[in-house]
Image 1 (cartoon, rainbow, N blue to C red):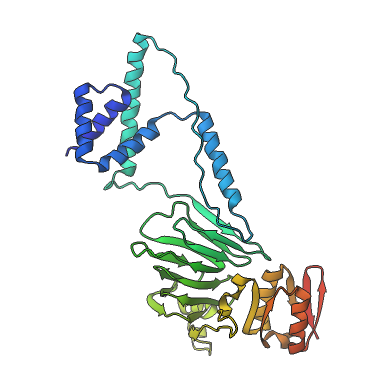
Image 2: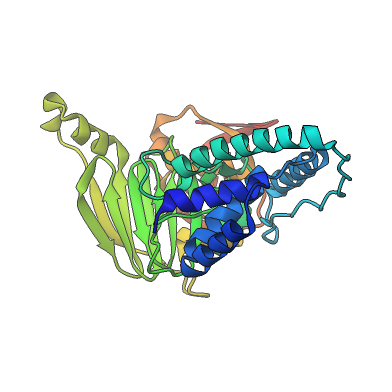
Length: 369
């Protein structure tokens, strides 16, 4: 088929200059090559003039969509509204000697528009279409959020976290950017893997449930797999890939990973913790819930963590600042689960085990001897 002939016929149709035999030829081509019908329809939509009210209504709908991205647990509301159809405006009658000139101008404009459309959207051209807009959902300290992605995947965001994803979620991969902590229940789609880009790792899955913890101010990045299968790649060492099995978690030491990437010869010989640690997920005996995901149930859990690590959790959970003036307490490890306890109750429980003094003033906690 001669595509140049096809687009010429489309141009004549849009400009109103197509003869009956040319319209018939265009119809025959659309029947023989139905895949061209979508492109022609898109072009026809682009070429149609839009009234000011249409643009305004779409802006209002988009703003409503942004307002739905709240920072609290709620039912997923990431739905798009269609702008209301604007009223048809009666076109004024045009005198014959003006109409001919306008048709020529319209035909020329349609030809230019087709050249632009083909250059951008027809496969095989060098130019690429514009990238889609990005959606970002974030939570503040002291709050959490639950959202549903366009493919139906459920995401729970912990406090002080952020996720960014493509607005239409199209393409060969379903990709998201994560800063902080999130639990994913991914809808299975073998033709389009789900990929999470975190600070130190990339996680690739087809359909599974798992937790990723990747805060910028923490020394470790953790991926805990509940069921299914995930493939983890170190961003500074993409040739090395690690497959997790259910009930396993991979811990990455961010500082050591950075040293490896920089190939610092002086520090490379210094004793340090291993870059990767493969461990088992810890479960509660009562309800067989994974400790790594208890935050989804609004439970604050510590599992053999140092007070220095716990302080960061407390800051995000209660939206406070924790100052540790006693270096001895920084490396002391604690374990415990708190549900519905306030800040003072948590500090009292930790004080009994750690034998330290604390003071709470406004939104600041001070630890000392």
